[in-house]
Amino acid sequence: MNISRADIAWLYPEWGLGDLWCLTFVRDVDEIEALRRMGASEESIEPLTYEQLIDGGLFPDTVLAGRLGDWTALIEVYGWHATEIDTLRALSSGTESVSVLRHDYASDDFAYAVDGELITCFDPGIPAWRSGSDPDRLVNVMRDAGFDPDYTPGDSHDGATGRRPNVASALLLVARLTGVMLTEEILNGPWLGGSVA
Image (cartoon, rainbow, N blue to C red):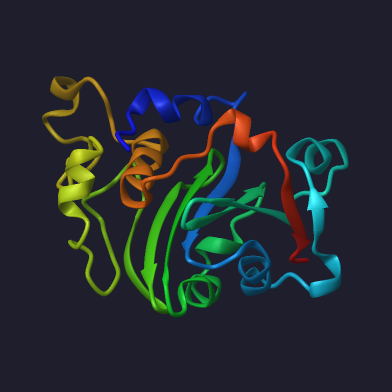
């Protein structure tokens, strides 16, 4: 699947998912297991739509889970549990997970983990400051998604590129890594919700 920046552009404005959210993808793990790994209790897992989540004010304690091909997508509104190291380890145990956090009031985050190990993590606005056990593993995919892996704010080429790295670039990176993307139609479809409070 050839996913472009235009395909994910609807997620980034505030009318998309808002100004604080975390979107995570976990490979080959079903929705119920993904919610369990997030810390949701079995009895809290039930069918839930995005509209019900928002209208019912169930965030940030409720996480949505839905299947997209080989991946389960997890949506946290006003939450970021999936980027915490213990949750990353649990989500990626025996598989892989990738998360993007948009946090307009603090800092954004990108995290990629495999089999319980954080491989690469960075703030999408400062891609040169990567951490993890193999911070350069995704450099080629980063470039493909429009990142300059050596970019730091204030670089002399800021004006030349005309586009500073941001969460939109991180969303494209996730789409390139997973081969799937969240669309408005999928967002409005059926999901499972679970409380991680």
